[in-house]
Image 1 (cartoon, one colour):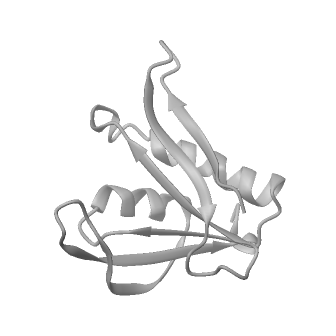
Image 2 (cartoon, rainbow, N blue to C red):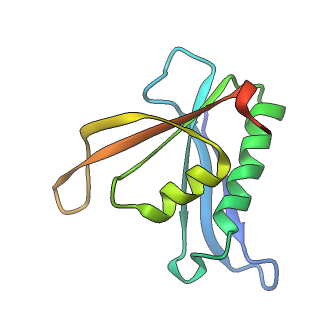
Image 3 (cartoon, rainbow, N blue to C red):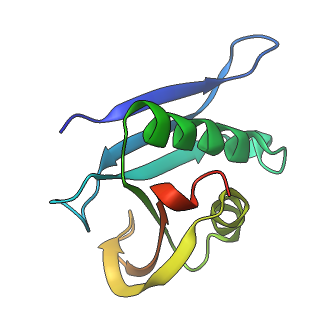
Length: 122
């Protein structure tokens, strides 16, 4: 299953400020689901850009790709990402303890969220 990925650019000058993607869902490999992932330049935080991009990708995921579910994960300390997830309407499923290793070798817990196709646009 290929990954769908998009660049996020500023409208004014085309500067690349982030990325957003739909990747194979590591927690639901046998379902019609993808996992959303994103990153945004720090100087662009708190402007609503990622929420807007995520909602567009959800429209594509459910409308064009015909997915049944989209998952997303974030760390407990990433409050900004949690806010984007909340604004988009994802539902909290639970926390997986010590789910992944970061750049310095420590492990972090992962908060897991999802959205079902029937919850999209509500």
